[in-house]
Length: 356
Image: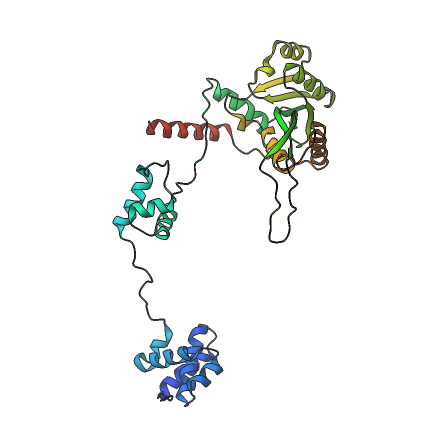
């Protein structure tokens, strides 16, 4: 029962396959199974010699009997594990996702779509993945309605990409209402297999405001914490900038449209200090101010998970972060040109108008 008949021609061909370096490895061991079985070796011994199971040995002996050497060269086609979805079923899921909402809900979940379409949740997931549909996600946006949007974008982007000679470009803004938060209970430290913990509730110990000026070229930040963010504090910060920068350089300050920056006393101070020039970003376009990215970093790295028992502790933490950042500053690399920005805004407006 164990022995199979292998003709001399087949034996020679199988031997060549085992010696040829270009032969796929799985074809090599199939050929060896047939050669050893042709010598009368039992299935158990063949499997031990080749390193495969007894069932595998019997399968390929049977394949050789039925199909000869050609049967060893390729795998037999197998039916799919699951019945493929019909085009109608796929189109139904896509159409419901794009043009309908589930009862009493704002968006589809995998399970609600599976119930509505009569498919399994895994089938719905595959359809959504294939068509790039993510109903659980939304992205926020805000289009500026500033009538001088194009001119302001061109002005600020021009400073980033082609700054004036003998001048510093500083991105200036306030990060207001930074809370000194203390947790109501001590958390547990991180350990292997478990994340660190902190309570979801907290105690407030006051707030501070960080005024910061980011040197676009070097990445250094001039920062100062103050109790409030009125025009008086902004004037104090302007004096700090004036003292902390070389007197022989002009200063171009990129600011947002906060009323404090346009206060009459601020304008009067700027008129007396002619090396300082303010450039305003468009309304609803804070993404154009590079210092906002720095505010995101300090929030993520030093403030959000911090525990502060007083405003003084919070301000010490902020100052340490500023000192550490300025010890090895790295500028943000601005690559977007004015034309690219305006093209994207135009496309966004066109898309919104087409929907409404």
